[in-house]
Length: 88
Image (tube, rainbow, N blue to C red; front, side, top):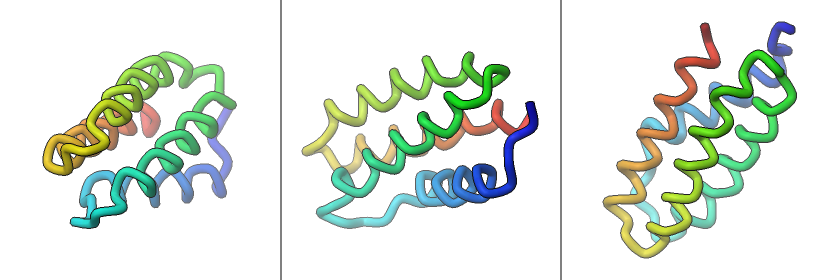
């Protein structure tokens, strides 16, 4: 099943946000819902389910890094790299 255009656009927006996370004291509150949305989108496509487990692990790490901005930004970049398997 091919990823729909609206889903691909949204995933691209989320990936870009995670590759270049802003310096914001509200980063955690903005990043987590977007990560959850990406996981929900990817979960709709059976061929991408292998990516979901890795994304969920990364999401848990982000939860744990709530107060460590630098580490959170690094984990966000790791999460964004997980999108590479989606495009294949």
